[in-house]
Length: 406
Ligand SMILES: *Cc1c(COP(=O)(O)O)cnc(C)c1O
Image (cartoon, rainbow, N blue to C red; front, side, top):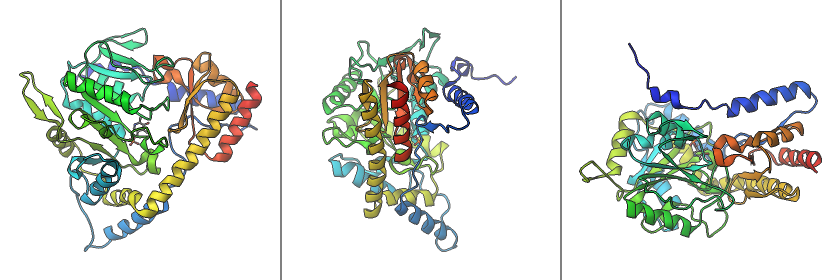
């Protein structure tokens, strides 16, 4: 008899996006003359930068000729891409990251989800609330949680992100071994300061713990004081892994390319306290279970770092940030407390009511957002509005909301 992994039974079916879809469909049937404006999904809407498209075309042509055809590539990713990443994303910011410490992959979702495989089942895991659901769900699948009681899984240390702490949780009272952090945050759009990140790094060093730092929205940081990488924090090379992605940076959500940084100073420990290099473990896992991102896509990602690519990516991000500013201003003018939107494409709005109730009010006005409760218990009462749409649509949406709510 083929038996299932029963931990899967503990997963809460995510009704979030199907519930949203159902309500939107119902609204459309009753209001056929008012097409909804979608500011709900965490997906980009604007085309790939031209530099990436050109690199992609050129690489496809190379694949069409025997002399330049490529088969399997290096397991960690092509050196041309890892060198461009190390130089532009890290060394230029004073972070001593070597191309050898970079693992190219097809997504930060897979990497943030898969990384927990390297650790024992009985470690203590700390996960922010609210946050990107992948961290929690993959730990449930791996059997690191108990029962679901009052909206939370037993065995997980939840890091509450609330208005009181500025949506950046402080160090937990109990000791933990693995810590997920995501800044700029999805869904709150909040960022962490240098000193806040330093506290986490110092904590991890004291506890011999590890931080998994998801920097998928790094490109949206405009404030010069906010660190772009955890490796800008002294000591982080010993205790932190960083996840990055071209998805939100350069519109690669459908193209698929990301990378994970595992510094050679990070160690993990066995039951005797003997230490092992994390880099070696992830290398073994990555090369055993993954066969690389296609050559044309890695060439397209490399073009993000070309002179034209850099300008085009900046333009892309600037457009979304202008939308975010429009949203934040409009919601603030209506009297709502908001965070995010300044260094992030997401605006987290305190609706002062049930998340779904507020969602329904906006839907009545013809605008789709995401109810905060879908991201964790602390998200109740909030909604997330996304800047991923055209400026015209964002302005129209804010006009509709202002008319309906004021
Ligand atoms: C969008 C997103 C990612 C990126 O995932 P990809 O698989 O690289 O597309 C990672 N982390 C967070 C928090 C995200 O919102």
